[in-house]
Image 1 (cartoon, protein in one colour):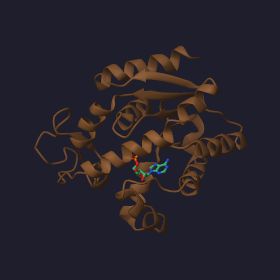
Image 2 (cartoon, protein in one colour):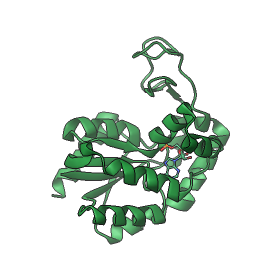
Image 3 (cartoon, rainbow, N blue to C red):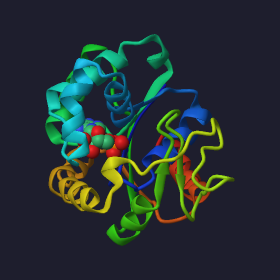
Image 4 (cartoon, rainbow, N blue to C red):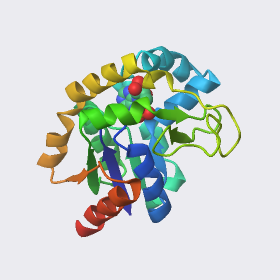
Length: 217
Ligand code: AMP
C-alpha cells in the first residue's frame, strides 16, 4: 500500500508529479483542486459555495475539503493506496486526515515536499494554460500544445485558469506561505517529511521522488 501526500506551493509541480506516481504505483490521485473545479463546472451546491472563493484565490473552508477527502478515501480504488495532491493545506486539515485514516486503520506513509523558489513558481504559474474541458495542463514554453492555444487531447481552446492570473497568483503564494509553512514541521515531527528539489525537469524530479519514497521503506 502506498499512501502518499504531495506538498508544495501552487505551481511547484504537484499535479505533474502526481500523474506520474499514479501510473507507477496504480493508485488514484485525489486532488481537492480538481474535485472542486469539477463541482464548479457542474454547478453543484459544493461548487456554488467554493467557486467564488477559488476565483478570489482564497482557500475553501477546512470542513468542506475534509468532507470531500473523507468520502473519496472510502471508495474502493483507494484500497491499494492513494496520492493526495493539494490536500492537506492547513494543520487542521492534516489533523482531520490523520483522524479519518485512523478510523480506517490506515496511516500516511510519506509526505513529499516539492521545493521550488518563489520566482520560478511565478514563471511556471503565469505560463500555465489549461483545457477547460478535460483538465489537461500545458505551459507556454515548458510544455506547449502542438498547436498554440489548442488542447492536444480534445481540440478545445485553452484558457488561463482564473486563479493563475497575476493578481491571484500573488494572493495564492502568500496564502500558501502563511498557512502551509506550518504543515512541513507538523509532518516532520511525525518523521514523515521527505524534501525533494522541485526545480529540475519533470523526469528528473520524478526520479528523486521515487527515490525518496522507495528509499524510505
Ligand atoms: P489547486 O488546484 O490545488 O491549486 O486548488 C485550486 C483552489 O481550490 C485553491 O486555490 C483553493 O481555493 C481550493 N482548494 C483546493 N484544495 C484545497 C484545500 N485543501 N483547502 C482549501 N482550499 C483548497
